[in-house]
Image (tube, rainbow, N blue to C red; front, side):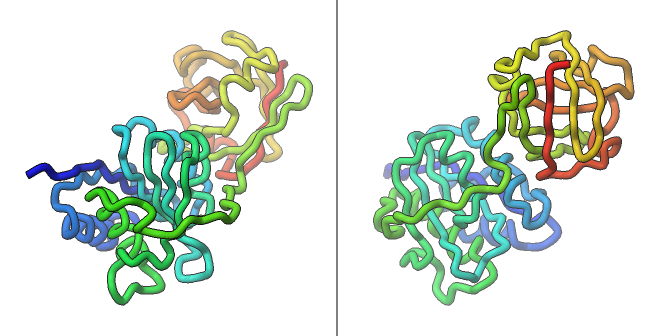
Length: 269
């Protein structure tokens, strides 16, 4: 007998010390034992919606079309915040309407948005504090079985919440944005796309001025780390297509004491 199978991705700030992620998977497999569940990461900094939105943005498109992306970074769980299911051109996204889905759904193109806060497909006796288990996981599982979105929720016409770091500003020969992610190496990923770097005339081999959290320094803009000596700053377009500030075999975050959400301005030297 044919069974509809879809990949379900999970992105949370739960970590792996507690049983939360395992229980979410248990709920999904109890409803659809043929689902394929993939962990993007569960190490989003606690409550950090901006980081979650960036990780989802740079990750979602590498999954098969039709994948159901579940993002649970939800400091407002149990309050009046809405839970949503979004159908985009190629994917489905499920999570709280707090900004964590916003960048990815806009990037892929929003088709329909549904309010699943009171979905009839949630678990019975839904808790106020674990919607990952009681709401998002079962809705994703039933969606993976072919239950249409309009049965899982109701049309949502409200304005979707944006993460705080959305948007950049062009200022003559400078572009201003934000640090949106710091990886395990201490590299500072900004929300400045490569096209904006080109727009202000920055090209490989040139030096740029960088302003981050009260720090000002010159930095070579090149393809990769090996163009500067060990311990030196380097700016480059990362594998996701965004401007990043790093240190060859070192941590830019430590050197600059930088943090997510901090403003970054780069200028042609």
